[in-house]
Length: 306
Image (tube, rainbow, N blue to C red; front, side, top):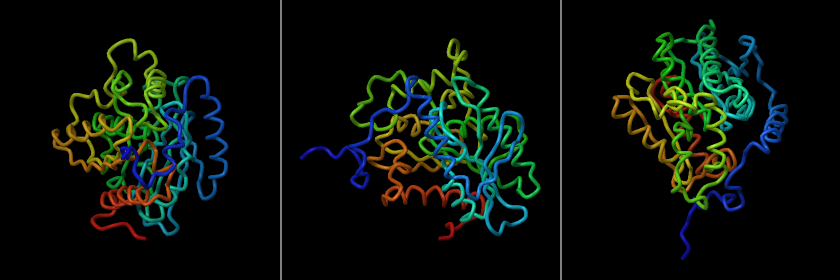
């Protein structure tokens, strides 16, 4: 009997590409994301934070005053993506959690390499914390893929600058370690959407001039030698994701540093499975685990509402 490579509920896996973005099709990917975002503008408020940074703001129908908040950072390998690409998710969390959710439009590499995207996220975090309708003691940060990597770096930066203390860093299959791009042992047959071809491109673009010397630990959080004192974490990843090993290792290091960290590993799940096959039961369970982690951090113990 043939080995079951992917989770049986993820039926689209065998039809999906092993890699996606690269220098030749980057413009096409960006254009597609922009078009998809145009269809997601309903119930989102575009707010210009400063000359370089904007957010898409989602508020619950009956917000508390002040309300808990989430800064969400979109994925896209550091090189593409939009603050509106996760609009449905952000709207759902705003309603279910009674929270103000801000999805940040950060500048993209390679045009804007490290540290600019991270500083954009920090600018958005400070703006969110300064809002009169937000409880500064109940702010979470989170993101998926590259956005998860930026959220992890933002947690470190927030600790370093000591102005805002997030209550949770929600990291969905985060892109944390540029050294993964040098691995030669990853079987491409077991990967979908994001393999080392895309990963090398994403990291080269994001690191830019920083790649010429020692990689700054805030650029690749897995390189940071001190993870103590950062926000508690929730990390989720599939076993068929290129980032699986680096994510599990990061969770272990957080725990060793005394940081509470919940690790949610999904057997047979590929990169971005929850987005591409959102209706699969395993994807719904993954979303519910994230929602419960956010609800506990922002609203106290107990599951989120239906």
